[in-house]
Image (cartoon, rainbow, N blue to C red):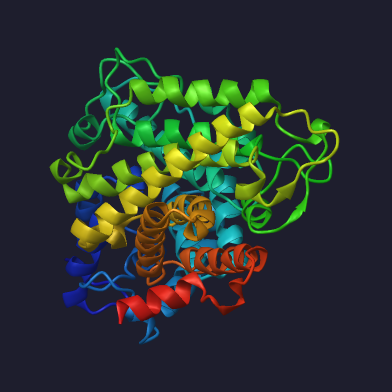
Length: 449
């Protein structure tokens, strides 16, 4: 193994393996065997080497405590910006990795800076090189996978910059090959696009991009504030944890739009091979399970997001005099939102009860799904039916527990937990005589002791 500046030689192999085992998009932006060969030959830029080695052998980010993580990431950032004019694809990989890293540390501005740099690199390099040989086809696939890695960041961003759409229409770009084809460097018989054809084999990354694409457009139409046509993730999160007047009908998603998105999600799910159940979760190997879980979480959170905005109890709005949504439509939306929120919480319980070792592999975007699931369950903590109340409490406990575990690796889950606490305070305030009750987080802490 070639020497790596700033990292003891004995750590290199360990940290490299952990990166490929735990990072959601590792195999999307790098081919492991080729990367290992290039690393051994000293052909990998120092900035990329420094950017990927920040988890220790226990999967906890304890290297941060000794200052290594921040130091290596800072050095990687300086080196990759110094090499900006070289226009190497490795630059885009480093920027995408550092985007995720700085977001995990809660340093949002640095994360956005690297995100913009990643998009700028792929924009200048281009997306569709000419392919006249098998090797060139594989190189084109690798470049497209890196485009989809950027798309993944764009879909779950707190800024609606539409960056991937400025590069290319995602519906015109072939989705990532199945992993068996990519690892073997062999082109599949046909390409899969965003509009899924059940007759074509769909790789796990391709299904993940389809899920994120549906989320991207469903969340874009969820709710509109102050006449804007798009709302950022931060605005969506804030809107669900605040009490505010209901927007006018011209500023809200129409019933027709809601049911159109609902139908698209349902049709896609019927042909999706990655549907998890209590019995099937054990069948998935750990290196694939984090991606399968992400697909399932995104699917359920999309339903919660579009339907919860029809229900004042779930989204904190007060219906205006111009609201024309029928009570029966709100009742249906309430049931749909609750069903999918329950599915999210049940997945959290399955992870906490039998798959805790793979929590470190879950991407940061899972936190928003957990937030959606938990926020819908909160009103039922005060249900007069003891059975309903107990079920809701168990689901909230499991979901908050998973958010707390994820908080060891990402800043986002901690913020989501705080928002859930604040929302529970709103529900307590609304309850007569609720002043003597404790917050959910405090109940969970005391129970865990």
